[in-house]
Length: 364
Image 1: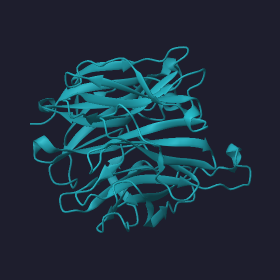
Image 2: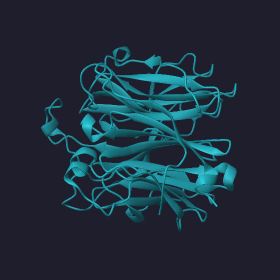
Image 3: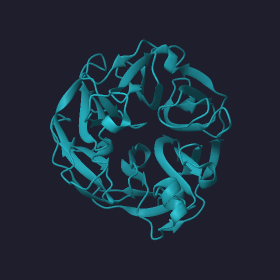
């Protein structure tokens, strides 16, 4: 693996007393040539997932080298909710911009919603729920995809309640189940896929958590799933996401941390994966602070994920945690937006960093 300073940091949002966390973003190209980046901006005193978070946006007119100040898109008060976060941006079939984000009412009801913009992000429609059944669902940032067929696919995980007290963490089962939601009318209506999977390992405390998905060139869908078993698991669908194979361990070693992957269109459809492998070092401060989410590495595949090469480490500080990476390609570079909190900040999700890396730095 190559270690080094790849690219440059083009934006860093540090925590402050009244803004304790900035995290979980997504990019999109606008029709006027600008980029828009949307992310979760926490305000108040705490930074946990149930704290008050706004959906904020910033713009870049120079391919991500510099960014505007914050503009607020949405607030939990609009929904009478505890929290909104974990955004995905996607160009829809009718050319609207789709803004997907979680609305958190509690352990009994956390689901993904879609808002649309027909004026390139200036105004947004009412929110449409993407999860037909009530419950607690998690969908990571920068995860929703549109297939070559036009179908929208949301990779999600579902958490069940073990007790009747829907406000009690003790009634919430942390062992996630893998499932997918689909739309065949450009996001107007949604349904669950026919498959769902639970991790058949009694000692797992996390289950199948925080999945992602990419469409391969032959039309197969490849999903990867975070586990606490030392590897990302993987599942495949050959019918557009209707049914999925039983998940099995993948080639990617990993702590209980998400992996991100996208296709580099300008490089003959090479796949780029960004994740935290299992490192060779373990320290008490590293485990307590980041959950093993260092180093942050990337690798490419020229054969649709069968093999991976040219692995490089862009962040290696074991006292920091790097995760929830959004990937976006611009010209000859890639923009990576990820959590990059330091142990001194007490929580690895408090700091948001955007790094711009030329593809030539890690691709021969």
